[in-house]
Structure formats: structure tokens, C-alpha cells
Length: 329
Image (cartoon, rainbow, N blue to C red; front, side):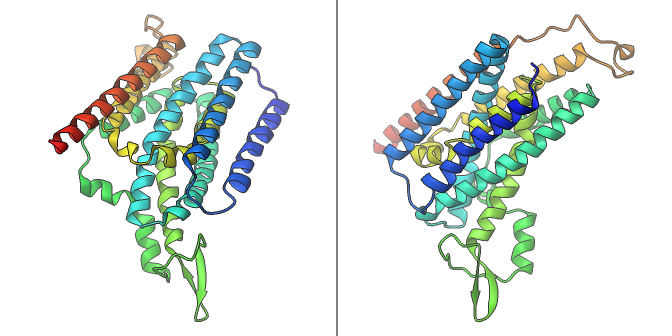
């Protein structure tokens, strides 16, 4: 899939305009979005992604359209799981609801920048070293094992606590009061950081960890940097509204992490199979590719990813309903 410089420029400009509209128009004032506002925004962004995928298919072929849709769905699903971490961070720092929208906007912008850097690095490594897929595959398998392990309440409570937060707490003067969405204020002639500053740090470090997991995942579905980039941007669009729309439902998706663990494990195995198929490491098959290794077609990948998400979502909602019925009894 040959993508020229102007295609990159035009695509980035159009997607940047949509993001700017979301940030500066829809999110111009701190407030809790209404259900109608959330549904309209999410429907618009999902429709936009579907139209883009169809355009990719009409211009570049069904293979690349399939890669885009598989990558978009995977990244969108991982982003939903990331929302749960954002929810924990908001709860830990007691962010007022009317300010959560701004915090999410900042977090999403930082996530986009970090993912852009990771995509560029990942594409560069793939171009230079085909064996990088072995490393990507191992990263995803380790992440899958970590996600599949049950998390205790204390571990979830620590989601907003990390070395960066601890360093900032020890070395910076801070106020305990939120002053709108300001990151710092001046009190008695002294510059003080607000709790919103720590929220941004927590979300930024969480975004970095998310990027380390999500970028190898999508490179397991496509090697085209253009598709990787656009799928990530579309996955982040509407994420802020999705946070408010799902609300308490996020905590009801009890099996989502297990489903995502299965997806990451599947893509991790797929990456390792592809690495074996193009192997150049001298200590594996004398540095020769293993052509007998099966390749997983993108259509099968989409079916497996969609099936896992459907089963885990339905199972989560049924489990939540049973739990509510037991409590009512």
C-alpha cells in the first residue's frame, strides 16, 4: 500500500480538524456531557471510521480495509479498557464531574502524541529488523498474562499512583483545592500546582503504558504505518464521550480484561508466527525462514477478535445482572 506524502498531510489535517473541533468546540467549557451529546458524538465518530474504512477498501483493496477495521476494533477495545483506569484515576483524585471532561481531553491528546511517537519508532524498527516481531509478540503475551490475572482492590487503587506522582508530590508545592481546570495557581505570591496537575501526570504515565501494549498489537494486524496511525486516531475519537456514556457500565464489564487478554495473546502468537515465516535469526532454522509456518489471514483475525469481544461483553452483562438479582434477593 503506497501512501504518498500528500496523502499523509491531507489525512493528518482532516483528522486534526476533527480533533480540534472536539477539543475547542465540543469541549470548550467544563461540563458533564448529556446522554444525547455523547450518543451523537460517538455515532458520528464511528460512522466516520466506517466511511474511512470503506474508502480504504475502494482505493487500496479489501485486504487493507480489513486490516484497518481489525486494527480499529482492537485499538477501540483496548481504549475502552483504558477508560477503566481513567475512572480509577478520577476517583482517586476526587476530580469533580464537571472537570473530568477536560482531564479526559488532555489525556487523549497526550495519548495521541505518545502513540504517534511509538508508531514512528515501531515502523522504523520493523523496516530495519524483521526479528522485532518476536519482541512485539512476547510483549503482547506478557501483557495478556498480566491482564488475565485477577486484580485486587488495592492494586486498582494504586492505578493513579506511580513514581512520577510520588516525585512530584515530594518536590513540588501543591494545593489540595481544584481551581477550575488550572494546573497551577499563585497563592500568597507562591506558585502551587493543583490536583489537576497530578491527574494529568497520572493519565500521561498510564497512556505511555497503554501505548507500549497497543502499538505492538496493531502491528500484529498490519504493517502499514498509515493504517496503524489512522486506526489509532479513530479509536481515540469519541473516547471522552464514551467515558460518560458508559458510566457505571465500565465496572460491569467484569470479563472485558479476560477477553482483551485473549485477543492480545492471539495477536502475540500471530506476530511470532509471522516472525518465523520471515525469520533471519541465525539460531532459528539456521537463519532461514520457516515457510511451513501457517499464516493467519486478516479475515480470520477479524472473526476471532469480534467473537471474543461479543462473548466477553455478553457474559459480563449476564454476570452483572445475576449479581444484581442476588443482591436484591
